[in-house]
Length: 134
Image (cartoon, rainbow, N blue to C red; front, side, top):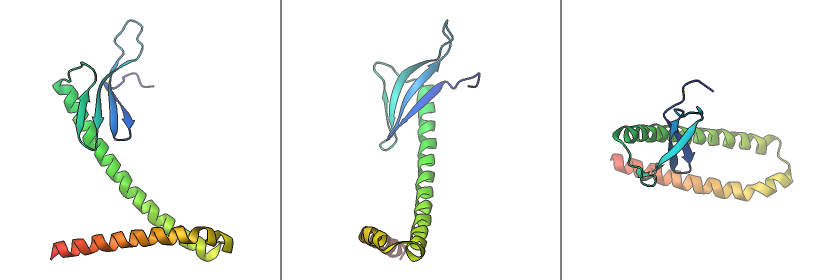
């Protein structure tokens, strides 16, 4: 562990994080973390914990973290989509070269429905974009 700890720690949750102030300035030099807020990335809400009043510095740090976290999640979303494209290609190769008939029977309907659903959404969204551009 590095000698210098950050002043704030963000415990990531599904929609945001719980924010703690990190303190090592005590007699035992133990790490103490005091919860100061809960943040929600989806709706931008920052709720102070208990009767804690957030300072301007704390709000700025939290807002910066929320901005960075939103960017990280957006990058991950796109990366997941590219990974899905790779999986589709690998699945196609598997189906064409290695799949046994019973394996194909097991997955064909689910794959066809998922691909039909995806295709329908993509075609509709593409049409919406084309109409919007005109």
